[in-house]
Length: 325
Image 1 (cartoon, rainbow, N blue to C red):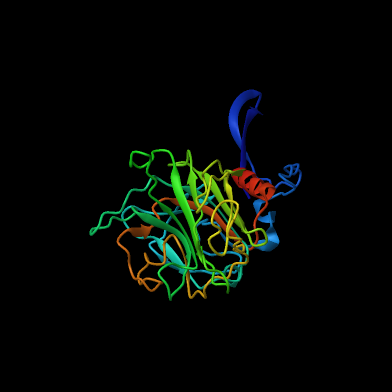
Image 2 (tube, rainbow, N blue to C red; image 1 turned 90 degrees about the vertical axis):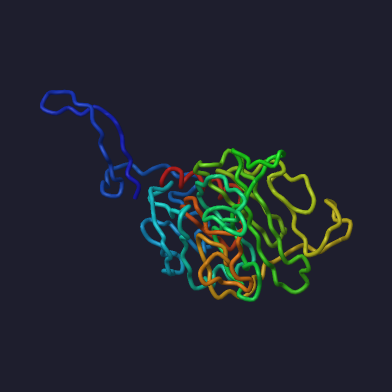
């Protein structure tokens, strides 16, 4: 339970002493309960029945929903947004590999929510790649028979109009493969250009609803701004409708079917802190890629849901975790 530190005067032996008093709300039954946020007392209550994976990184790599322990490579922890956080590196690969989670593997709708603090990335030099540059993997549900995994979450270089890395904005991409019959455009890759995010703790959420085929992005509980979400047609206001084939334009003149329910390829592993081709040994068919690397920043409170969180749920999750709840 988060400790709340308050500053107020203490009277000791007739003398006024200014001090810090630490109150642990778990240990004192006389403390009044904290008011709910969005109807929830803790972040774990938000869409609890649909939260299929959670990493808190509080000195542990255990995924708490399926109780998966994982195999670590050089992983480390540091003070995070809420408790401790996963600490990436610029000098060594750090990641953890798990058995695939059935809750993620079988999801037909999806939300991925997490805290991130990361520097801007630049292109990885070739043929001598540098750890922590290029495409930095955050999470992957692998696909052993393909180049990309079934789910791929990563940051990549974000240049401004002059071709120089933007000093302010991070570029975060969620790429997936939908193997459901009838889907021609199986690979979808919503990209969130997150402003005011470099070297700052930011809460990022991607949601995808199978019924509407709408993907939406959020920063710090609020829907992403104009043109923040990439796709074949635009402009976008933080949401975009995905199709199973080329719609031919914003109004879908080709009458393409919606992208619909997700069906990920059968995974053999999943990894946090890396792409599927940045592990050793690699987890896909393509082998190592010189332009890709493991994550170099910080991650905290990483959650996956098998539904599209509503805007109010995303905001509540952000507010509760910001408050240490």
